[in-house]
Image 1 (cartoon, rainbow, N blue to C red):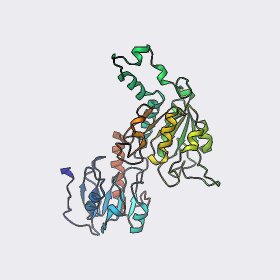
Image 2 (cartoon, one colour):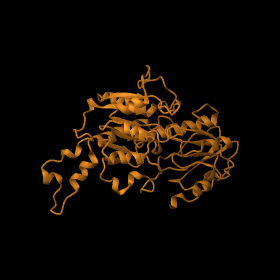
Image 3 (cartoon, helix red, strand yellow):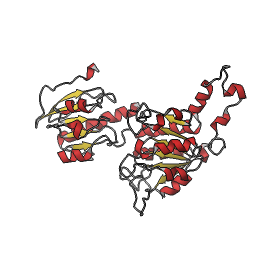
Image 4 (cartoon, rainbow, N blue to C red):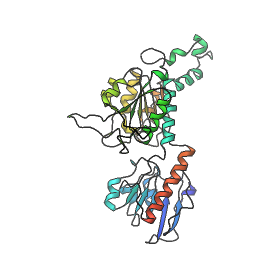
Length: 368
């Protein structure tokens, strides 16, 4: 778009001057930042995801802010002045951390900036999956040649809400929640679910063949801290959570250890009442197996906010968008779980703090 034409700073970066480039202002607007004692210039772009566009725009930057824009060897090019990359959200899978480490580029993310909104979005997707909201919408809209839908023809459409075992949907007090990823989002989600009267199980680490374990449950390092922050958490073995849960919330990031964490064996072991809610990352769940489980009526529903390739718009990006998945109890949203007024405020606040800490040499939340 015209507003994203290449812009050059009035002054190149130096030991006393920072050139800050915001690559995806679509997420939040940043202005009037404080980098004292250094001077600075802030250049903002609306939405940058193409490799060549990013490469052009970071060559004269000393600081880059990237919520979604991929930062890697190819998109960086030479980037001779770049010293610092800020991620206003928590996820860093779009950042090549090893490449940044190799170049001596610091990277800071913002844990907790999106946790309130994502936890609430998880609940909205849960209710949609459990109550078959999309299915019920389609029931009303799908009419025959006589202009009648199932409700008009049969007098009742409640059977379309039945779970995979043929029973009516369970109530909140009957739900057993399994949370996979007990960071800021998982903790908030546990608090909300408990307040709704649901039983909550915090998953332990997934055991790999040979007895090794993944790092799935405690993504922020607070393994012994509960959702209220002042008592120990009892963790339930991963396999037991898979077998016991009627709701499975995925809130962990995608890492080599969590890739396809829910795969064939996990879906085979789930209860027929189970609904799977993925607000972590697309690759944590094998979506081919997820669709197959829904189609074969082995689980009761799913809701997804994250995809194997983003932005997603077709089956080439995600099997969840295939035409033959339309009639499944599958609720989809386009990676918007983070979005709320509170999130925008937190992203702004934490980005400003990163900038100030870096400028003054204070310790910040650096992942590299």
